[in-house]
Length: 92
Image (cartoon, rainbow, N blue to C red; front, side, top):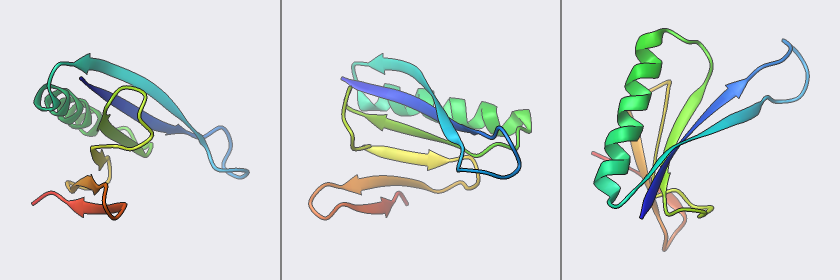
């Protein structure tokens, strides 16, 4: 099982503490491939909408604190987490 989750930083004021990200579950899927497809589509829709907030998407095992895959709204780059080292590795 894998879940896809979207996070969007919601700014309340121009100054002050860092924004608290709004989290939205995109679904739970039998395969990582299905979760990735949904997360990538959510990213594409967000970018096409022209929204200016910073957002990111992850795929992980349900309830996990570590992401298997991560991407954000400011680039086309995608990453996976190397669990042996804790390093983010760019997907080529």
